[in-house]
Every structure is written in C-alpha cells, then in structure tokens.
Image 1 (cartoon, rainbow over the protein chains, first blue to last red):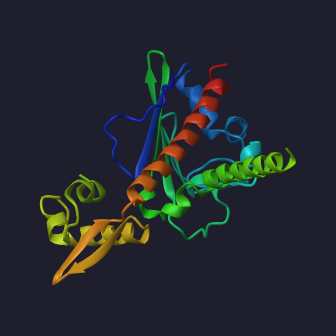
Image 2 (cartoon, rainbow over the protein chains, first blue to last red):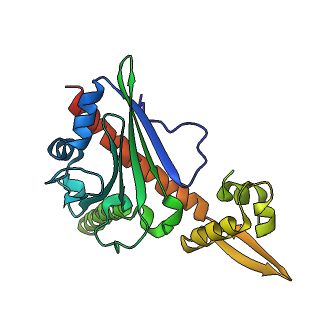
Length: 159
Length: 87
C-alpha cells in the first residue's frame, strides 16, 4: 500500500532513503519544497524568509503533536527543479547544542511519465549519539504512554 | 561494506583487519571508529597486546530502531506533501 518503502539492500545505520512518485509536474513539486510559505503549509511549520543556499531557516512546528519543537535548518544546495538539501538536528530538537553534528537531508527530483519521482535521503546518523536520534519522536511517544499509564491507574483505583 | 556491517558480520576486529581490503587508509578507519565510538555504536577492548573494536551489544538494534522511527516520520511528511501537490 505505501509506496515509501526503503530499498531492500539498505543495511546502513547511517542513512534513510525514501522514494515516491507524485502525480504532479516537477515545477509544482519544486515549489512545494522550496517556497517557504508552501513548504510550511504541508510540512506543518510557520516559516518566514526564503530558502536559499547558506540560509538558516527557523520556525515553530504547527502540527499539534510536535508543537513543542521547532523547525530549524541550514540550507545547503539548491539546483532548480533537481536538488534541494539542508542540514538539521534530526527530530527538530531545539535543545541540542548547534555545534553538535547534524544530518544532511537531500531532496532529488526526477521527471517520470507519471509525474515526478521524489527521493529523500537523510544521512549522517552514525555521528550522532544514539540516545539523541529519535529523541523528539520518543519524547512524544513516552508522553502518550505516560498519559495512558495515568489513565489506567486512575481507572484501576476508581473501579 | 561499511565498518558497522563488517563488525556486525565479522565480529570484533583490529584496525588492521578492518583496513584490509576496505580501500581506505588506516587513518580514515581509525577516525571513523572514533566517530562511531563517540556515538556509542562501538567500543574498544584489549586482549593481551591486541586492540579490538566491537559493536556495542544492543546498540545496533537501537540504532536501526531509531532509524525506523525517523523513517516513519518521513513517510508521514511525504504523505502530506502528496496530498498537497496532487490537488
């Protein structure tokens, strides 16, 4: 069902790769990725300014389940309608020292008969302490687990 | 083959063994091992005069699990992009 399966030969601990085909022209996909207002709309962040090589972009995440996080990237390369890349702290963790290693996210666009093939590769995980890699996701996950434990305890006591 | 794969399939190994047939210099291997050690993925132990590097037990699974989680976040983000551009 999902067309975002990782490629089978991917034993790597250092990178993730996802590839999907979008039924939209390359220029449309490029705009959605690199126009800050459009990007913010689907990704779920409030961004001002423009994506440009070397530019630092930052803004609060608007998705309610990640509302305690911010989106912050340093743009690397932009090759119109072909490649867009940035560096960031995985999981958008705002508490991480900016001097800590970042991962590199690369979007690559390719025209295909059905529209556009978009491949996202995030790499550099091997340099990041394991505890920190999915901290944001885990924090969120633990938050919900904690709430469920509270509820279970409450129900047990009140029955 | 990456250092992690080599250690995973071949077990504890010296820098010499990890360098052999890798196509990279000993210095590069040592540097990369240092990076992996700081990330908590490998550790070094001494057996007699030998220095051996090994994967931290359980850390590889943990690393792969966190990668899966982040992969799911990307799945979600791309699904939202699809809805946005496919109008």
